[in-house]
Image 1 (cartoon, rainbow, N blue to C red):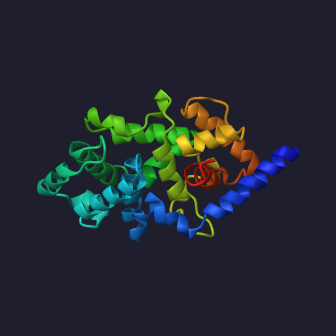
Image 2 (image 1 turned 90 degrees about the vertical axis):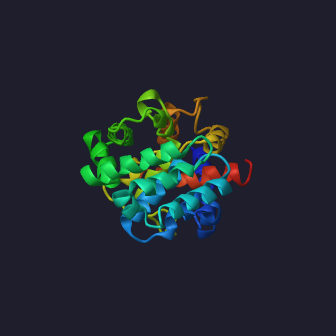
Image 3 (image 1 turned 60 degrees about the horizontal axis):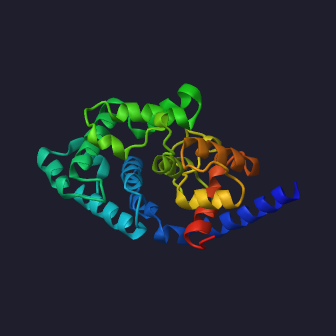
Length: 255
């Protein structure tokens, strides 16, 4: 019990240290922070999270470039982009995410905002079907690929196949969490913060294993469930706040 208390105190200290505005300076969340309208924020956040793998400065640079290609009005672009507008996206590339993928994403988002009530409605409807983020991600995957686009499936995690869905869980953290430091947006109310799942990546996974919070060797959905369950012992109302602590320890302190 003493060891558990000490570990909670350690993680709480690291959370307080990294859950500060300076965190935004090196984090891709700075891109959706450029916007004030709800739909602009969530679309910018979703697209930024989608390409959030690899070098962080490159992620931020390319996400900013994508916003410029959308005229700095992501919601308007999604609803009203002409064929010529979409053609301009063909030159966008981030690692293996290319112009064809980018165009598919915009067309799919147009379908979501025109026919499904927007990103918030899709994720929240999925969540409430079984009161879980797993069901939210299942439902989102199904709706997102209502349009044909087999190649682009590689860029959206499929939790039914065991994917950890790091980027989608990060996106949901951005949308649902809201605390005193205002790093996450907290603009969605339909998914409870207590139900969020850890955005598991190399950094958070390695640190969690060193701290004894995770025994599973693979960074897959079962590992997400295991580590999030462990973090709920420390804070049942807001378990993924420790994403700041685990990521900071791994990425910045090389723990």
